[in-house]
Length: 278
Image (tube, rainbow, N blue to C red; front, side, top):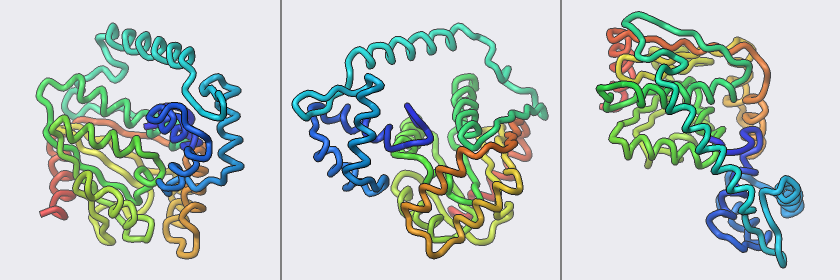
């Protein structure tokens, strides 16, 4: 999950690295980013990113070394504390949890970035409001866009799920080069598989099951086709693919997420996913 600009994960990476290693020269910062290999960037472009963050008063540069601006950190902390406090006061969540059996809610957004934000928010509310905590979450995605399109905060989020003693099973519905790369990248974090034949739609579909609750999204046809073309491409460089994926995430379209409670259907979906992990 992005802390800053979701359309430019490099900003997030720069701030996180400087937070971990204060008084860092730009060239050392560039070396760390290059070593990570997820955000290919020239030293010239990195200087532009750094200057942008300095102008925004998020970074300070003294004698060639970068540190986070303490005033900005203080303001950020105040905002986070205030926002969290307001959420705590709101005893009735925006989703009015828990839902009754069979009840459903449709949440609409205008981009994939917006969909991701609501997806996170809904799962977080579920975990907070359910009295009997489920022990696992199962996921199916036609393609691994969520894993490849995010930075290392994705891994941190899933590791947090693991720390809460919630098992995560993730099934990907294609075995393209990009999909299998996601499996390779995250198989040490949670059980994940890519399969070319599943009982779920092979394009434009994702579903999560958490206890008796289901979150489902069917992508707009034009977006689903764009993802198919991107993931099936065989001659596209990795860095170009990630850039295209980022562009797709911001394209305006009519997304809708269906969120409902149905114990029988939830168990059916759970069984269909987990059979690939036995």
